[in-house]
Length: 506
Image 1 (spheres, rainbow, N blue to C red):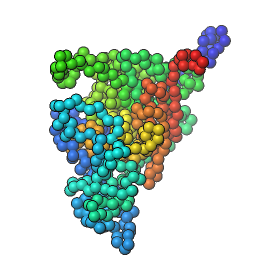
Image 2: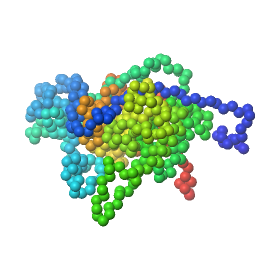
Image 3: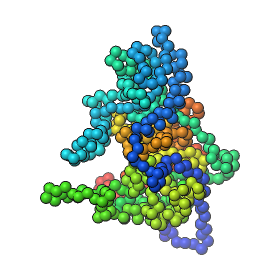
Image 4: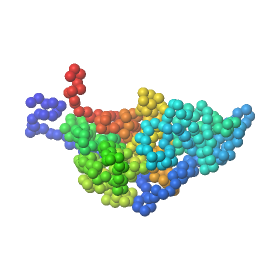
């Protein structure tokens, strides 16, 4: 029998097979987005405090940027003055002020209207966009004193959404609106150096060591009804180095860690319960319907992870469709969902920061941590998807990959990982500090469950450099992202199943 790519040939006694060992991974997670547990976790507080906390944290930063640029700004001999509060702006005075952006859009959901109508009509389906060509969006600037409506062509040249902290320069006109001449945002935060939180340094790295790769995937979409096991098997075989050539096995052995960015379980809500004789269906206890629960997807996910874990460490984030809380920051998927994979996790579930992380690390969404010395930050896609509802970036559908990269770059420059929370994005009502404020700029910023893969790098005013990555949904594209741990260059590995019915001329 002739050899076919090194496979399907008789074994010879003198054959010697190369031994491949998985490269080690340096992993140091942060626990920035973990919320209180038990009775300390309350949802009775006001959400408005989050905006004040965000403004108090970022206002000094924006003021420093604005003052450095507008210190000598003047028009017709009038010098721009700094105003402390929004309500202190005077008509005809050239000034600048710092506040929080609020977008008043006709199509944006209104909680008061929803409450007033919920007893009369069924709730409307969620909107795919709040942007309307016919309805003019009003841009407001607010602080603890009040609101000021912003106008001017400069607003169209800047990407702004609700919750962004900005400094605006201009003057109030006769209509009481603030004519904006210039806008400043916080820009990228201070970026930690590589290996800053590690004992080893860059000089201790072995130059002869093979280049490590970090694998990122999202949207596995494991379902109990669809035949999705074949592509998952191909992914598993690639990561484990099974049934591959020597070069492919070498490549697989250089993958030091797998990061799963949410939506590992498929969204399968099923049909709503039928209404008999015009009667309204009775409320389910705690919103749970035992007859509609399907344990098969979680069991398949647990089996998939348990197959990989003896060979490769895994970080799995919760996502919008996963069995976790729906409000951001989503807490880790409970280890009880993984009866086999949890054997590789840390023993201390309640206080994981007190122990070394295990090979299986179930983390929050958003999440940040150090992998091979680089600071990583990522989410499962909800903040980017919600921001895109506010704006129109053009393109074939207005929501192309280029627009998503622009939104990701803006989030870093705004220094806020979820600016539209809590206005249109569910989140926990923080009272002490806004955990979505980005205090340190990452080296790698990834977003999962996007329509397609794309990547770019952005630079900051103080030498910061960030790699942006949009991770496509695996169950739709079959694509795995590989990130070089030395150069931060990115490549794609695509898994596909041959379908003879789709061949040309069939």
